[in-house]
Amino acid sequence: MRNSPLSVLVRSLAADDQGQDLVEYALLAGVIAVAFALGFGPVRTKMATAYQNWIAGAQSIWIPPPPS
Image (cartoon, rainbow, N blue to C red; front, side, top):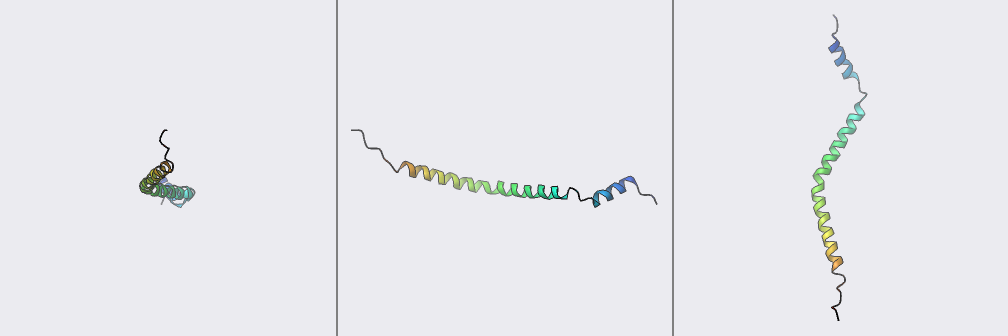
């Protein structure tokens, strides 16, 4: 029985694990990107609120005297 070139190719690709690390890092980067995208909205809102409160507080520290 003779093996076809396609079956030899499939077997060699299944046995080859040379690019496995790259695939794992790509999957990890994808998971991190999705987590960042999902968590960025609430963080952005909280940061904007904190910044606006800081600006309001900084502006109310000193009130200029009325002109004489």
